[in-house]
Amino acid sequence: MPEMLVLPPDSFALVTGASSGIGEAIAERLAARGVSLILASRSLPKLEALRSDWSARYRVAVETIAVDLSEPDGPARLWAATEGAGRTVSLLVNNAGFGLNGAEAELPLERTAEMIRLNVGATAELTHRFLVAMRSRRSGWILNVASTAAFLPGPWFGTYSATKAFVLSFSQALHEEARRDGVTVTCLCPGYTRTGFQAAAGMKPADETPLFPVMSAGAVAEAGLAALERGQPVVVPHFLDRLWIASLRLFPRSFPPRLAAAFFRRSRRQGA
Image (cartoon, rainbow, N blue to C red; front, side, top):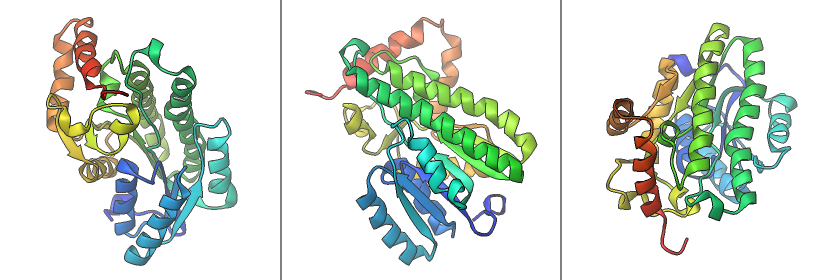
């Protein structure tokens, strides 16, 4: 592993949402570099399969914790099972999250509230808890996974976009605060990625959205870890995504939401 990201002995990288998609890809790349892992997700059978595979293939310690971080006490239980139980976490990856595609008034309120609790509440609480511990050691890394949706108010994707805008703003602010204490905070903002995210959100598959570039979860994971190593505050992996994000400042504030509305209204999967 690059020297800057070598974890202290007997410490772990904790990855939430590690059972699939970008979280799984980040965790495997850490395992391949010899980093001891704690994998957290609701899906214990999938985590156990990854633990068995990676511990044998990469010869690293892999622990698993089944937890639903959208539950009010989920983040506290994860903390208690890791740092609270004497397992030092030197690298935290806040990846757990989901989206919903649809008009706000037509979405189930409880599911929307669950998304806010997970995408915002759990990310903020875990970041705070582990940042305090890392600050005391004057060493650590936090990678918060947001989205390119963070840069664009998205009708038919409004709550999700807002949750990721929070993660982006929160991470950028903490990047400035924490670097004085030896802790790096980086926000990873991927665009369309080939994962199960679109199906869970009620959207068409990533490859059926020709307006935006599509990346693999592995390529996104590599970009995120490289940015964390370099100490970047924010990384948008694909240059075409960086281009359209930069172009938004050329238009009146009323234009981007209209553009997003036209896209996200059509991106909803038939029958979803």
